[in-house]
Image (tube, rainbow, N blue to C red; front, side, top):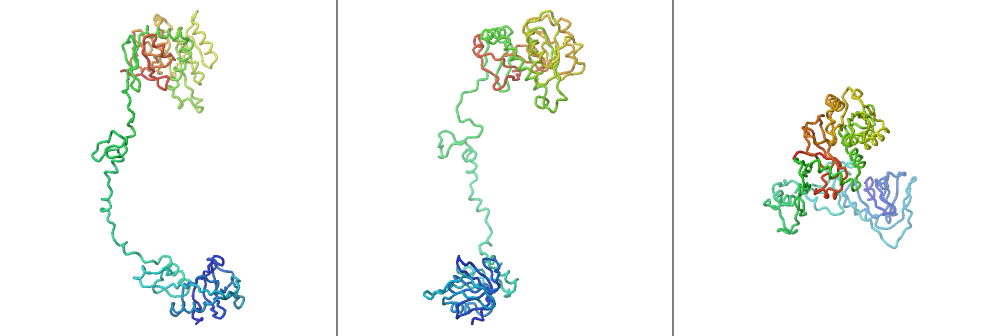
Length: 475
């Protein structure tokens, strides 16, 4: 009977110590209670010896992968009878190696469970026991490498499909279970009728109230855009980008405001410096800002012509030119020669002379070709007769013919058309009711405190926000 098992493929489980072995049965010895495998594999790796012999006491489980002949059930019973008594793993003939080396133990009898892998009828696929594996296909011949590979494929992928998979999925019935209106109402924060729930946090339905990202959940007072009121209206009103109303003031009120600020310590020198910083910052922006003033554009430095008169407005322009020259802008300052000049002019000239900027006293020394920007500080609030002098007329004529854009700093209220056509005008603190034509009006913060405004009767709230120079639009 032992000869019937020769050539069968088996898998032997010898426990965690010895591991798993697979191979072809080469001999079964009932006397010594041993079974030998040729061309064995140990834990999936081919053994270096051609044959391995196992004792019945070391076998935990024995599975038949491929039965060579006769009925599998009858042979399984035979092998179980052959290996019913314990023994010792012994060496086979012709240089066979043994695995284990455990001594015989006749006190306890050990019977290894045997599992037979065989194909059953298709209808019984769902009734396979836990020890039954996937059956092999009909028509597969025993033996050979190809048959062994097909057996392994059947063991992994040969399970029968459930008949329930043939039924079509009912999409409409499952879609009807999804309440889209309720989901979208939760997302939008509205009920099913389209009305937004308000009131208590629980709402009528007991769900938390939801708000849109642009809704304010805090109750605030209405925004007041008229935050600046003056005792004497200048006749014009402007508004900022945010809608705040900025009224103009008369020159007399503006002069009182600066005088009050000077009494509290905001001296003329401080105002000149503040005006120069704000005006230069605006000019740098008009020249192109970071797109123009970069280390890669050193060969194309912008050129600014600065036209100044012998007064405070001229000193403001010189301060602006000094800051521009410090920012690598080529500045050409025009200032006519006078026997005596104001102290503010001489002080600003002394600082300007320490920069790389140029100074000329004749219109003939100004550039013939267009410059990048012209800054006009020729006019004065006090001395309107300067408009009739030759140097003034020549400078104004040059600026109009140069075809460069013009920025006028602190233009006066003269009631006459501006001699130099400006594209931008810059007012200080509060705007004056000047006739700027098509020019755009800008306002700069010169640092006058709020209580100083109140001393001259102006109810003031800063319209500048996070900036020092803001544009104004006609209201």
